[in-house]
Image 1 (tube, rainbow, N blue to C red):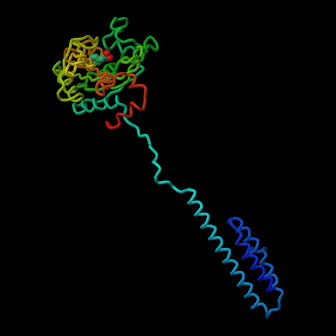
Image 2 (cartoon, rainbow, N blue to C red):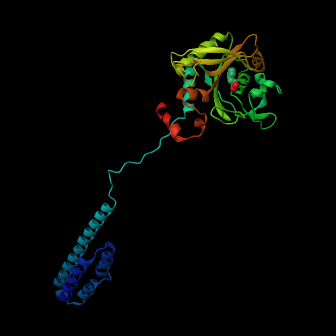
Image 3 (cartoon, rainbow, N blue to C red):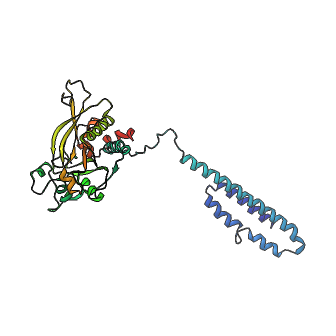
Length: 344
Ligand code: PHE
């Protein structure tokens, strides 16, 4: 039996050397050392020998078992190390490769301009108001002194949804809604930014959807001087301290008097594409709120006065950043839009 024991040991030592996979080793270990494995034969045999031989024989069998067990353990460790090494080789990280570039978002240039205008007005006590883009004819036109069938409607080519519902053509309906809501409370000092729609053919300076920002003030003792001072402040903050403004008489049905506002150009009048050598750039429309508009909004025109300013955000953005085609603002071409990242 001792011979057989040595034989088994020899066989195991040899076989283990040839094994290269952890799984095969595990299977072989079961084959030899498990309860029904090859080694169990000796345990069965041990039962059969006379009692006095049991201790010394048992000790020998046990020694071999311990030896075999540690042989398996050693080989297991060896294979584990080998597998780890192979994995590390395979998954080696090349630290010289360039890292992934993540695209970060940036504010749209028009939103930058809207934010800037809001930041100029907030310290003066203005609040931001919003209104619906699908608007009633009543707020978009009638409350603003543009009755049905009045020729002034031709100024704003309109997308009608029904006879009385339309896509707002300007942000002025928010004026009318705010007056109605405030019920003769004063002062009203609001800013209304938002999208507006007109039935224009799209070209370099026209888009069927564009952005406006409306400022409205209503209080007692508001005069044209307040309007002019406000416009001057805004022009200087938006375009630079050296800029001046010029008011030209104009016409809007909802303001009287009405003005177009120009800001001075910084060029030397030698072929300037922006002001066409006139020295002035038209930036917005404004005026004193028409008495009829005050009346429709529930304010007594003999007591209350007001002014309104209509910023064309597209135009101001194009001027500020030297963008020559309005379509660049709406095509969402990342090559254009991400240029304004620094301005966040
Ligand atoms: N709502 C006018 C427009 O879109 C602009 C404007 C607003 C003019 C306020 C004067 C005062 O044409």
